[in-house]
Image (cartoon, rainbow, N blue to C red; front, side, top):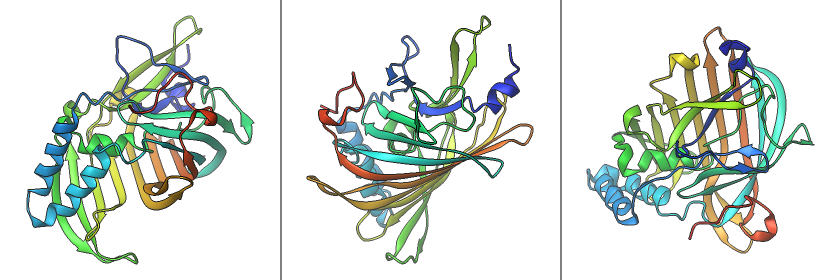
Length: 295
């Protein structure tokens, strides 16, 4: 059996929504995807956003961002294409493309994967860090009532789009049950892969347009990397942009995400993921077979 270091070097650390431990994750076009079960009701979500907005006049914009994240209006009816440039220690590895959708209550899901233009059923056994959780799951987790995220207003910053309200946030690992970091290792007989996952705590910042409450960007760093997985740092950033969707109008969606994960021994993986060509989520798109859209 290969050492843990070698397995990690192959990129077998996965950030994905959580999946119930008493049943296996479903295969989507050969890609094993997780599903985040929020366990909350719309009423509790609304109450959570009201609590955030009620923390003071400086938090009203953050309350509106919370409503966007938890209302189900962020990505319920459309999918986007994703192009990811993957690197290791700043050296290009490959380009991954996929179709991605965020389904509230089930997290991020991928299909139609390619690596350097070649269709693949899975990212298994390919060097590089996989795609995962940057299209909607991470934002949903931050605002969920059960995550008990602490927010702190920092300042009003100037930007080309107008004034932005900047907030710091932090949540503990024990309150995170929807955004996991996973590691896949081969079984002793070398025939199957076994998933090991943990739920990290995160801290970071959120930038929100002061007047409209529209999300501008989010940055997060793991505050509790798991030594057993040899992960010493994990940082992501996501930018949001108002985008025109054919037949659906415009919507605020992720446009660019970056990820950097470093392991003991000095190996670091970097992803630059661009979301584009968004369109209506419909059966004709042949995405997510076996899954239903949000009711």
